[in-house]
Image (tube, rainbow, N blue to C red; front, side, top):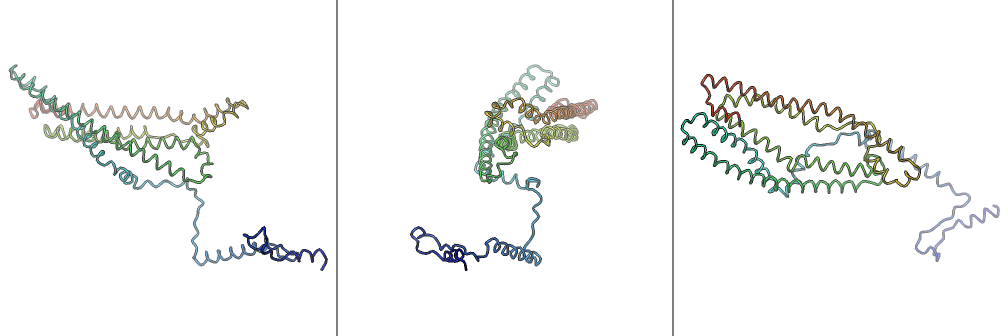
Length: 362
């Protein structure tokens, strides 16, 4: 053994009780004949891989195909309404108050139609002036009751659904923000997860929740209440007119659904960067943009990102106009059919003038 080898071998001994390593483990300096660590790790890795292959062949390990990205998987929206109801349980009294107010406000037009139809009919059916005055005066007093119910209903709907809807929206924004903050740092490096995109998405999602709850929900309840009350009154005063109106309801509802569908569609784009992301990055690096004179280039890119949205809105304007025209055609077509049936029945003596007006206006 040479002197150098002997010197290296002499150093390859454990070091204990060193003043500088009192709190550390034993350290061994490798000798000249020591086996490289990389070789040991390579053998161990091969043995581990062979063991995993054997476990897979035996069926002890299940192989999961993760080739499909999570972004490509459609989100699970089952039970969304149930979860929203759970989040709204704390404000259930406000919600019930708002729903009751919506039902009252929705039923008022039918009551107004009854009073207006009876008063109008009295002008043609009652010949004595004093009798007409006394009868219509008594009917006119009922409008004060409708005014009071309208005031109470609107106050209940505004307070109840306004409070419950705003609180639910706040809870959802806090939950989404908390969920976003729990993502890994690498998740925020993707362009679709930039600050501009996340803030825009948080705002738009909150508006979406507000559109299915709160005052928007109250307006939908008000419409169905008005429709139900109107059909009931029409069937009471003239079942023929009521059935005619019911037969035209699907046409009105269908046109309204088509109009709402085109109004809620979103543009599709193949751009890798969205306008909100470009704005956020541009303002964050405004010093660099001005230093290198890139304002014109970035403005052109921003215009390019807005192009798909502008093109979509042009197309949407035509579709929305067509859907709105269809809805108006359904409404006025219903009036024409009801008037035709009512006039035929009045001429044949099967329907009174007052009953026809009440059924029509309701």
